[in-house]
Length: 317
Image 1: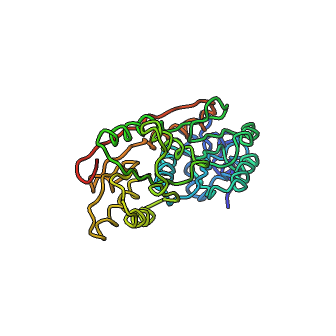
Image 2: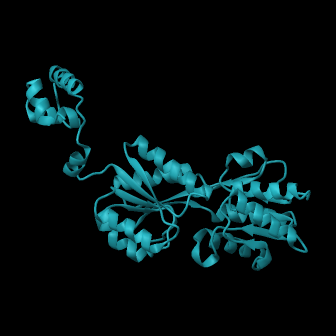
Image 3: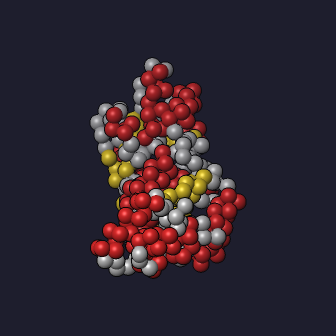
């Protein structure tokens, strides 16, 4: 296999000139470029990207820590990060964590080992104190509100739209409000925001029988609806933590020939558009693009992204 010295010898130009042409990092005349390109094609030369990465100190790769992909918010946020990274000339590696703090620490060690140019945590359980120790090895970005912690972050602002939802629920006089959630209150900022906003509007905690956690997708939503239907007084309103989850709830009620209660989902997915389910758009595309830009720029900034309540007609509030 030809190397850069072979290309220089066969083209008649110096190794330095060939290197500038191949790495696109300096001036090369049109005549030299044509001669070098001709040799590259004739020898089927492939640049040694590993060596080039070592010389530049960059891998052009961003690691994205994702708890799991079953939950549509994470899968869509990962997709938006990958799109923004690709447009910027970077690759993305999805690093599944299952909310395992030891796995998250291993990914930070890989950042230390220069396997990535930066890490984006879509969610995490590892302490911010531990993360701070690794910021000297490369940019770290979290997709949640970190307050004054000096780690870059970008996140959806949820409280305003959550309050809008519960204010509307109260105004419409719904009495039995159910909420599906990913994780329990003590482990999830999103869950805390949901429950806290409910309490702020209703001045009491939601009833425990109407709260179901561990809900990630359509099937989980279906099972949550089976639970609700088994109650002596099923809910008359359901705030689902995803549109696919709301779709699972909807389908369960239909399969059991029961009237579908008013619902609002989240993430503005295709399911809510097809089924006319109201939703909240957290604009994960913007969050993902911000996260990539923060990695590339290495800036320590906190960038909020406003959420948007979308009310639709049909089986909704």
